[in-house]
Length: 248
Image 1 (cartoon, one colour):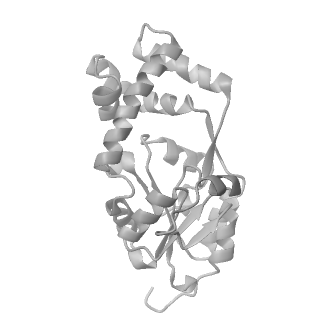
Image 2 (image 1 turned 90 degrees about the vertical axis):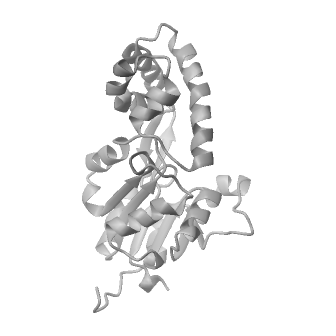
């Protein structure tokens, strides 16, 4: 079966990268949010107010399966009481700072070697990610020298639709030039990622979860993934070098 797989699409958060707490880094982000917006509250109070609004935005996004672009996120949802002409030009920076307040996002140690090996084995690689940022993931790929290994990067923040809606999966397959029936998706959320992968007609759904997380949040028995792995490098055990066909 795996010899029929042509493309492997991957999630980013908790699949390729994880968040590492760093209080000094996070405190700097909170202070910068205040400085950039001109807010008069303390960083903690300002971020607490933003958190309330962000939860409202997230509920809207979950219900509609839509994602606002950065400008809309900040002028409509996060800071509607601030002058739009002050906020809109800084929306990209504000998004990065908002995410930095959670901690540093660092790649898992086996990601680079696994991505390179899968590409060398002949697989088309892509990214499908729900994210509010438009630049952070492309910037990370460029910084770590991984851009050339991914044929397509589809982000909900620029595409406008979110997982588990099938549209974002179809767009990734379309831009990569592959049939969804010959594609795999690797994510970390059993309910969202398995459902979306199946709705889109992908061949396989793989969930990457650490054993401790898996024990606390096992996949639903009525819609299990095709495979469960605990580290990115385990993909190399599932996908051997491709058998090229005369039609490719």
